[in-house]
Image 1 (cartoon, rainbow, N blue to C red):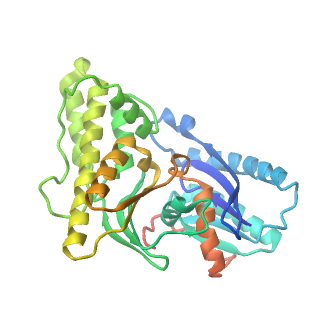
Image 2: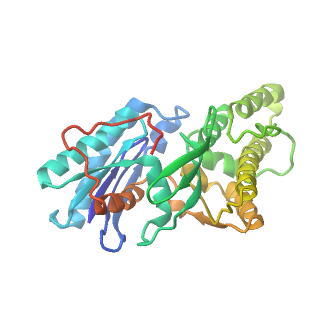
Image 3: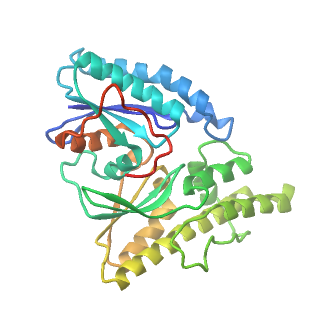
Length: 336
């Protein structure tokens, strides 16, 4: 089995995955949402300290699961890029320590690649080639993936889709994470009161942008003052943000269609892919273009070690082992 570790941001997580059949044998994640909620976003130093506290607790639970016998573990897979440097280092130090003490190899895993493989947790077979929309707190990208290569087709020019939800929730006076908060507020909207701009609506550029929409939310809050209906503004924001994603995905679909390269499989991954409104709209788009839509289970949309372990299986089979003593983190890397 592969032991995997995830600490790229604010979720401490460990998992065990069977090499033979890719079955998830053990998985535990401790979220830091409550600790960061008061600040309206991630505080890196706090996140690092919490990883230092929580990862050993999960490891102790994993040890009990194995009845103290670590011999079935054949490699350690750990997230090394991209992410927060002060949190990535916590997972890497644990991974190196375990690899050295158990005399087993280390696998360096790209966090974004992990999100793609979240589609195949508990599945021996994977589906490639694949077009992917990755939406999270740190990234908004359209990717084209094969088993051998992942290429970035489009990405955000500024804020990410998930980040814009976090910042909108903060401006409305709510906590973190903003994704579920805005979705819940929007579902309680009784009447459309506000209309926000759709970013890059008249541009044929295949790119994303959320800074202008975020600013429009700020201006509407200032304009309405005490008369603001938070539910209605959350609804308007979610509608515009999702419509922006759908319009750019439609542009991508049409571009591929015009080239005679139909998209057979399209996937949505990443923490923000849990947004139900976005899923519904993209399901309709895929149906229009006769494309199958792949979705990660909601429990594996956000950061988790299970997806890192699933990538780890592939890397282990290819013997893509890392230099145990010289492996370092690459927090800003978005390449594959």
